[in-house]
Image (cartoon, rainbow, N blue to C red; front, side, top):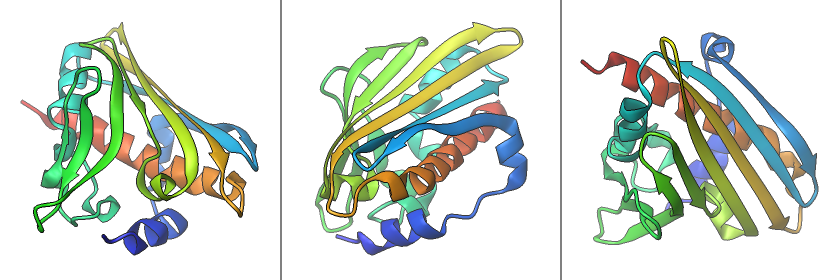
Amino acid sequence: MRSAPWVVALVGVIWCSAYAEAARAEVTAVSKHGFVSEHELDIAADPERVYQALTGGIHLGWDAAHSYSGKAENFYLEARAQGCFCEKLSSGGSVRHMQVVFADPGKQLRLSGGSGPLQTMAVAGSMSFVLVAQPPGTRLEYRYEVGGFTADGLAALAGPVDRVQLGQLNRLEATVEALP
């Protein structure tokens, strides 16, 4: 299992300032026991298309640097309750990043769990994607709420996790908007 790249990526993530302007984002709450990350993006595609990319095409915009296998194409998401947001490993193994707890096509997706290095900690997370139709496309409202315990606390992870998630969302947006 390659956890070191996740840690390095979280601490040293670099993202383009143009992406920062495309979305409104912030860590809206933070403490040693947890944090909340929220983002809003306006995507030039209808909610059904955004939902399809978020679920069936999750691998298309994923950054391989934020994986255990080093390959974005190894990610998949089963868009149903108890479905897996998982990654295949070349050894024949797999990683469950999160579990789907709510799936309403074209409207909302909610996942439960700690993504990346958070899965090695005693934390719980709820990640929600709400899709709102608005001309000329979709407003994606994202929220990731994480709480629990780790010896060093969670406050220092809030910013890096927020930036990684914003990068993933911006890649999703670019992927959706580039589709024919």
